[in-house]
Image (cartoon, rainbow, N blue to C red; front, top):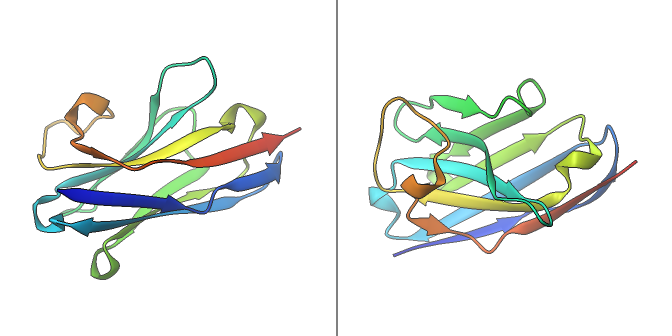
Length: 126
């Protein structure tokens, strides 16, 4: 089992920045891919960014390209999501997820992820 704990959410104004963190514990040795997803009220969960642990390859949703950056610190078993130039549509619960497998091409298919955190709320006001 892998446990994921997110932190760093909060309330910001449009154009502001936040940095989310997700610490993994447990059987982390078999994690291959980490990702960030978000879900707004009344909407389906959507993929935001993902990173392949071994290579550092990343992928972003079109809606966040150029504004969000996913990164990892393997020594700390931590994945980050730096979010800049936040917009009101970015208001959502943000979830960290981990996958045991590697798939090609890399994509944001949430069905690939085995473990999920409890989420951290991000609210962007206009």
